[in-house]
Length: 392
Ligand code: SER
Image 1 (cartoon, protein in one colour):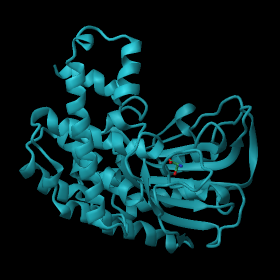
Image 2: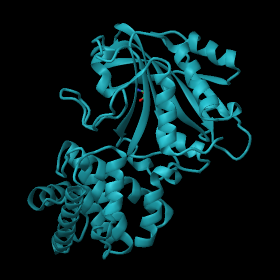
Image 3: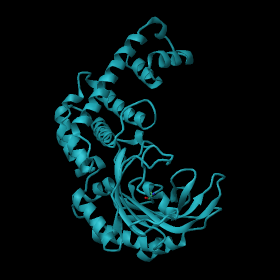
Image 4: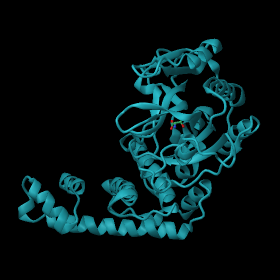
């Protein structure tokens, strides 16, 4: 594979689709439009939902973009080779224009010819059909024609944004990351890493579970940028691709962390910067609580080995680099101030918590009433109480 930087990769992707009639839309904030049920944008299609449902997009029927996304469902997996909280999705859309086979053909050509992925390392999956929607033969035929091995699944090849709304069968492209020649299939061997999902977004699920056709047949694709970079740059995890180079250069000299902790701290701090840069402030509900949780996980990890570690030592260059990378106009000093305030608040909460839990009443096993009391009277959430007592 060819080595390429993050900027080159984004440029190659966007230009490839621009040459095929797509217009670039500006990748937007992590905050979904008002009325959207999710807390954060989790996929490039989010800001496009009204257009997938039939509204005319001002830039036409073929679109391409780079969208920052945040997924907290994967929080516990951050630290493995492929999961991040904030990541970027390279996306393409056909809004009632071309169909799935063309999308797959272009995607395959871009990966192999444009980006240099070895065709022998590619595996595809397609929707195998269920009681409501049949086997995706159009996608299956593309892969068979191209000589790409293909696996059929049901749940794994159906994409939806939530229990209701636009959805459809998808065909996913996997790349082999093992040291041995490729073997088995994506559902049986996780060395097949999913990089690109092509969704035939042509149904809408109603509240009662039934499917109705959308007014137009769309294609919605999403390619995980950091996963792709790890493959193109020949490294073993998303944390080693060039997006994380400044973090890898600066953090180990600052705090001596084992690899899993280094990954968690880099990921969560970077995400906290981006979320703050999009205007969120730490708090106890909704988005604010997601930010608070990210910060607390960072601080708990840092203080576990050395309680004297502090975020004032965090190089401002990392904050600035992150905001620049995501084209955010937030003031780096203000973002830093938010992180430091949260650190101070959490430090005070821990101190208070330790003092309170030291009282004789809380030394033995705690019941529900104790947890409620600690939460309601002293502002100590259950998970914090549990971890503080675990520390004792
Ligand atoms: N919406 C699909 C996904 O998030 C493709 O972009 O995987």
